[in-house]
Image (cartoon, rainbow, N blue to C red; front, top):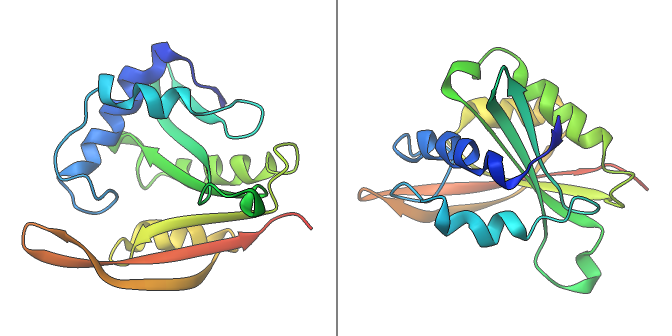
Length: 162
């Protein structure tokens, strides 16, 4: 993995947008634009909350984002993690490899706790996180509504560094 650059944003957004219609990985109900994601992209500090990409050839095949959790100083050592893969890479072990690699960076990023917010019906992502030692720390029942259907959100966490 490497630190993402603005040149990668087209691929990052394209991968993200492949998940919108699945109602599996994001609460966005319509595709997002590159322009709408610029502030989010620029909010990633490579030293503390990086946005990382994995290339296959000349295209981004997957990405991992660390973001600050809840925006209060007491949570400075906690980060939210997100992972997205291109459709061609799903189910092949790349997600596990990238998540494992990202977790190995947490010490140098001064992160002690990692949390992930996963739709409760997203079994592949839940299994991925559980395979690397994440535990379900909470569940928000029916907090999202898409296409007239309510969806629950599970909170997974892992203490990575003491």
